[in-house]
Image (cartoon, rainbow, N blue to C red; front, side, top):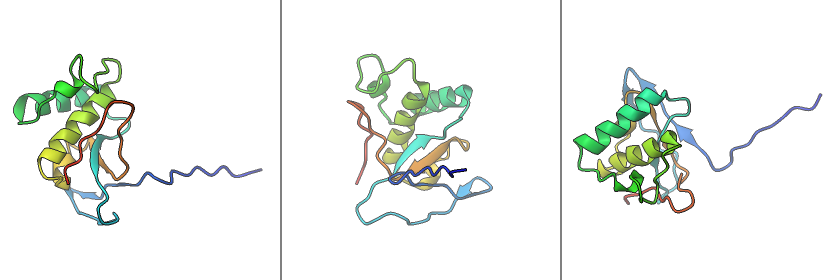
Length: 123
């Protein structure tokens, strides 16, 4: 019986947590970016909470996920939440602890941008 091998050659997700805190693991090449995205399987209620918290309680401007914005997608809440979570994470200096979102965020070293929706990256 053949063994199936699944490779994700350009996706490396690192998340080492201990009692709500993160330990930074430097697995990136110099100059490589990091983005904060919602963890797959995050409940809709948590995604909505993340969107509301970031867009109403921070200096992040969420027009990009509003109607007419480059990342507006009323059907895909996961993508909308990921965009604003990343905006917050970038705005806070890419501190790993700023991507926790009650355990619903994860760091990606692969740019999650798609089509016209460009995920910000602060160098």
